Length: 130
Image 1 (cartoon, rainbow, N blue to C red):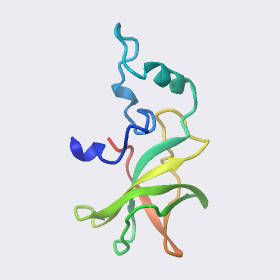
Image 2 (image 1 turned 90 degrees about the horizontal axis):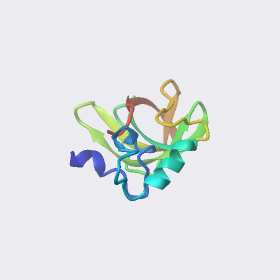
Image 3 (image 1 turned 90 degrees about the vertical axis):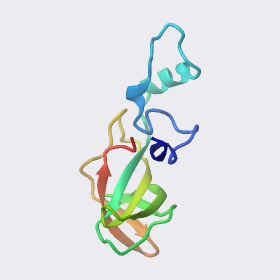
Image 4 (image 1 turned 135 degrees about the vertical axis):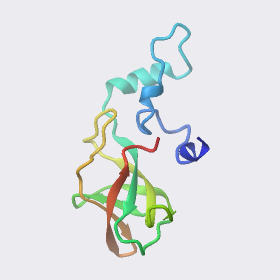
């Protein structure tokens, strides 16, 4: 639906936003950008979108906060808001790491989001944006 696509743009690739399973590689007519997608398929993905929820229900997220995992800076919050259904702030984060594999993301890391001069614990909320 529309709410799932507002957090990424034409600059993001299907592998980075978790949509690689929707590609129709090898069809007779192909598609615009297929060569580029095939090239990325052979390369390691170094950026990926993930969703996180802050453990503490009080802080708010607005975007551009620093994302930490296991004590290392690994990305930033693209957009954040309060999730009334989950009782806390939620974020779509740009994870940037040389350790990512195509279609995978770290699911056992200790995530934190830095707000001001303090870091708040965060939990993986959804494996991918879609």
